[in-house]
Length: 143
Ligand SMILES: O=C(CO)COP(=O)(O)O
Image (cartoon, rainbow, N blue to C red; front, side, top):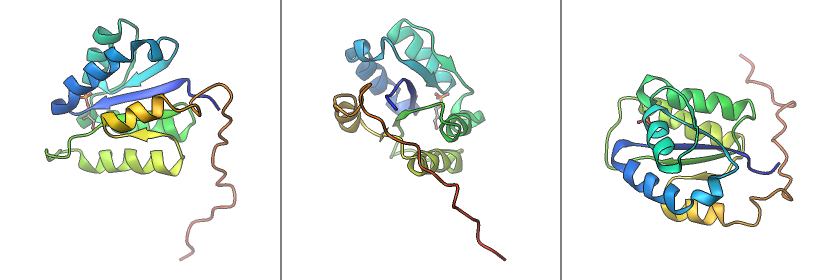
């Protein structure tokens, strides 16, 4: 499964960093379908000059909407510049988003260095066929 659908999210103090990074890598995003939380999405539309699938702002449920799309297989990669220095009112949603991304084994970058590595990886290509995890044998704990 090649990466076609990307989610871009940044907390307020990280928005400039994500915007600058996205602009530098504008060609990478040319043919991508991009999802983003509300405010990040608006900034990305300006930075990349293309239509972004804008969801709700993070504190209003945007992280959860992105998590749901990851679970549905509609998002292949998450670039999430979260702020390690700022407490957030929607911290449980942020944790849930990172959990779902780990569960469904999608590439996640939480800072610029990781984002650079990911988008330059030869594995992010049409040729790479990453299967989705199979949880069909998974059963919840019995009570
Ligand atoms: O809070 C966010 C992610 O947790 C991001 O939301 P905004 O893009 O609306 O600022």
